[in-house]
Length: 302
Ligand code: PSU
Ligand code: MN
Image (cartoon, rainbow, N blue to C red):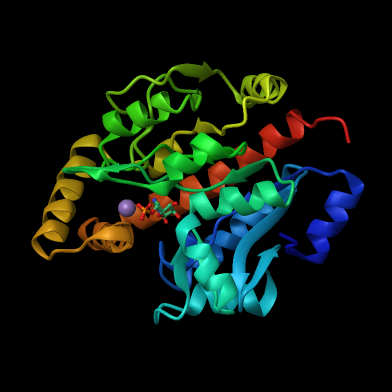
């Protein structure tokens, strides 16, 4: 694979500056206009401020693109008419082969970041095992099992079964590192009932753990989980209540497959009067900053 590199990404790579990738499903299918473009710009700025280079990954009219920006980025943010497909690993050949456009989930982002030589990326929440649907296991988990990338997220929403999600990661030997926390953050809330196997006190320790992962070269990914900033977090009982309701409504309506996550995300924003959106934005920018800090602190030989 020979991705098209944006000019900023090419310069950073040539200069040996750390690059932090970003996914596009969260932009096209995870949040509405104009919040999605606004938060994407804030994530890019947070990565630059920390001394790294942002690289947004997508497939644009069949071209694998590393460093989406300008009018093309705006097109991905404005399109909610279904013309840009949500693309996980399995969907890539159809989109690339037929010259279509796709926004990338965590699994497709990991695959392409690795092919482009990028080690780390920032996102909101990863996919996992769906609550009440133990065979709906996100390709994000199997990608982490097979591709050596570091993913920085805010844990996973409890629209997923967090216990089963951690079990699958354990089976595949994927390290899960809580950054400043000893439980898996639950996206809108800073903690959950589920302990993480490894704790990093701060981003310097997270970078040291990334160094250990690099040294071992075991070939699979590593997950860093960072709690949502405290002032944007939802109260635990409220999060549980609205998530329970949204999951039940999705079941009643027969929403299935890769449409579940976007549908529930949008419903949660409605049910919380926009506070779920504010939390989502705050944690995305925070994860971008943390990913860049880890990348800069763990800067390897160039
Ligand atoms: N969780 C979120 N926001 C998102 C996603 C997950 O809070 O936008 C997206 C990510 O791109 C993730 C994908 O990789 O959903 C997982 O989808 P699925 O459950 O269909 O595997
Ligand atoms: Mn699924």
